[in-house]
Image 1 (cartoon, rainbow over the protein chains, first blue to last red):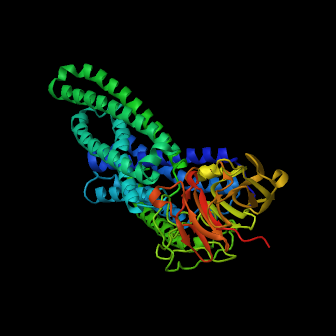
Image 2: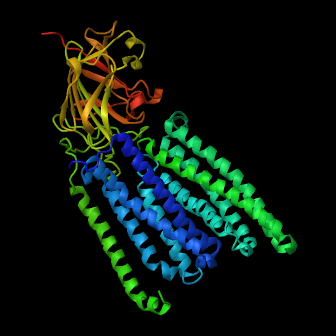
Length: 300
Length: 275
């Protein structure tokens, strides 16, 4: 087959890398918002910004899922059998089915607070979508396959809860329309964030060592170098997250105990918004480095 | 949209949603069944045979030889394969999965007739070849300057011209179109040293791929065939793993996938008396 638009190997890598960022961003927005609803703020399903976040995430994931194979087929002229393995294609279609479920039943899902069967359905959708991402990752194949799959799955779910929750929290907080919710949301989100970050660290270490094939290959490979950048940015995010959490707790305390200080609380929220904005920028850098990590992952 | 109208449309939306989900899940099952039949780049003929009871498959740094690793397609771990005695090629790196499959047959003069199959995960536009750095094989090889002559190269089925048909240093071969599958045939000279103080004809040869600029961890399979071949060792592995030879059907090969950066095998030979 002749390529429709010939992409040089470098351009192809770039296009696929950008597509991966699109997919990861979509996952963080969709799964993160669902996790936020299910675990932190079930009543938040009525918040228009959160609804927009989830819908945008689903849209980005659909585009990313479909565009990946199309870029390879039309950009290189390679036959479909070379581009999509049996497992890649199957999991891609299953992911589209899960996204179709989100699309068609979203209205029903957010009609009432995300509790009971709505919570179960929301979490189940996150798990299915994360599962399709794990199966298409470097976790499948090679030695310690099941360990890598479990670690990778845990990592993805923790990313949804923490990073996605952070985005959702920013969407609720920055417009300053839901300040009265702060004192309830911050402690809940802090707990979720703490568990998620611990999970991220543990699963990240296991996953990286297993994929690289040991500590020495990890230390001496390109994969290890990019991972180091990711860890550095992650560390910076944690520091800023802690700062943001302290700001938010102070604002919540002021709102609860000293109504007269509401104006000063507003400036605190503004500072928090800046910190969170910086955090979200760093989150995007993490998504980009993760996308590069996929390119330099050692063969299983 | 008014809420009344929205609620009237709700059953239709749900029915359409269910239909789409069922179609997609059915499509996933259909894809899983049909995918092996999809058109793909032609692969070399492969023959799969069970490993004989004498072949010991050991775990390896980048995967054991016995497990067929055709991309991420699920494979049966209980059906390890070994290279057949002639003609066919085993499943694995260089043939059905990204990697390099190198098989060499020594001649009476100590040169090797080599076939090197390369399969890459991503297409490349320039094939980089190198003089094999046989010094990786140890001190005995430091003074050698091997060259590959009569080099023939094919990229995705298209012949590629190798200047002077020789590889004496780093050689870049621009390709007319991006390719992932390569076959190189050449005669490797100057990669063998006679073992002094041993029986006449006893020699040691170093085998490693001439393909370069590939990922450091690209798995490599190295095999040596012919009656002159006595044993193989993998000098770049840990001491306990250096005795890496396993016997296939008519040849010896490294019993593990070697990462490209460590892909060197020493072949112990009994060179035949010149006729």
